Length: 275
Image 1 (cartoon, rainbow, N blue to C red):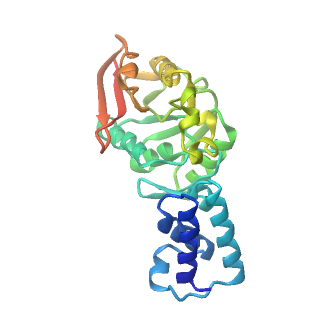
Image 2: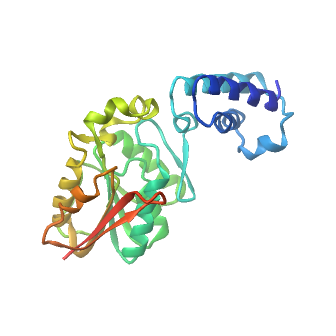
Image 3: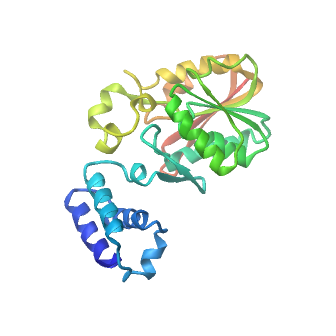
């Protein structure tokens, strides 16, 4: 079995199973089975698969056809130009979350102490550590997620302190210059309508906020008023159609409230500065 033939067969199986981007997915899974980068396949279509590689490829195809996300099969996802490890203990990083990084670098690049609340795989904490000179902390209620974040920090050469706690409960008052977060924001009532890859595989503690989807935002704003130093920034990713409800949570203690859209024009990030 050559790589070219394996790709044709894998693409057909995935397409028949209703998997989107079937050809691309087959390429990623075959490259993973071979222990190569995907670009290798373009110039080596006649590569003969070993029995072991064929066995792995078949298993990966079967897992993807059953709904397991490609990123959980390969254990990898790129974020802000870096390769992060992911497991079913953490959300799969999305490109939209890069807007949080870009906003932080624009508004608070001089922050000396940064906290990533609900850090998951550590994408925000690690990226901000590598992009700035700040001291960085990450918190998460899931010890399993923190283990993933710790491995990513070590692999990528980022020093970050990772704390198991509920939001900011472990942090002292007026201790941070910048707080970032991509919090849970899916309403519980939307669970049935989610893609099976999300609903059945990604950790619910990182997805669902409560009946309205904005419950965690209210807690973050209240906590940030205690933990931020005067003049510090709170920057959060927004869920779909939550921007105005979240904006209304910022009272007299806040100024410079700004909402940034993503490339599709959807409100994606909210930033506010503590007076």
